[in-house]
Image (cartoon, rainbow, N blue to C red; front, side):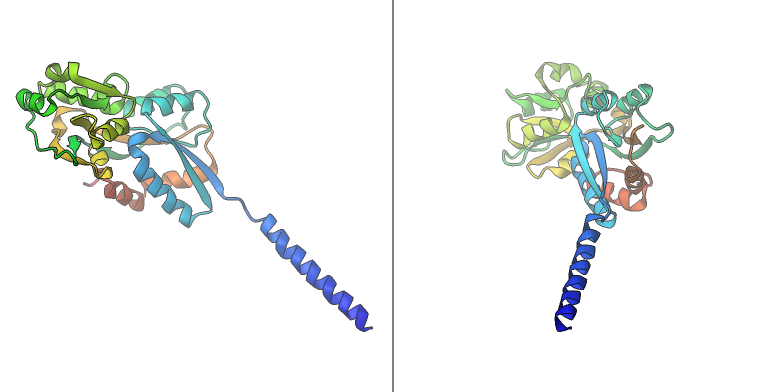
Length: 261
């Protein structure tokens, strides 16, 4: 009889282990979210993604690049759930190609432009006139996003043209694939000046803002986001989070402007 009771106990323990072990097997997998976004949004979106994942059973991942690059990838069929660009032109291009959910495009934040120089090299404030810019550039070049395709480059060219400065620096421009590459070039001292977003200057400790570009010298710099046609259910929640009061605070903390500022 004692042997039978021992056998029964072992059987119960084995059954419980099987059940408990099985519970882990059948635990719900986290909802995966893949965001394709402009390089200038790396810090703020990774911050937002980490906070969203902490509060939800999700795993948010990102693919960053120039707005033109990530948009073309989405149009080509990349499995993105969300697209976030650094201007409305590339978002409109995505919508025109039928890869976004109708009426899902929303402006999440806005940005500004600044001239920066290397902190280590002691970059100093510069006035926005031809002579001062030429002195600041010396024998170097002005790093900025490629003016014809990269949003930061387009905004930058528009601003410098409006200020009467483009013709004097056009031949000194070092065009970059995205604005973060221009930012890094300035931080490393590879170029004396870089034209970048205000939020970029806040994200990079190696640069110093030496001039702020007037807001009225260029079109409003907006940050639109949208759900793709193949988006997951979990990504709808992340989009709502980005639009929420908490999401707006995260954008503000990273140097962006939001409605109400």
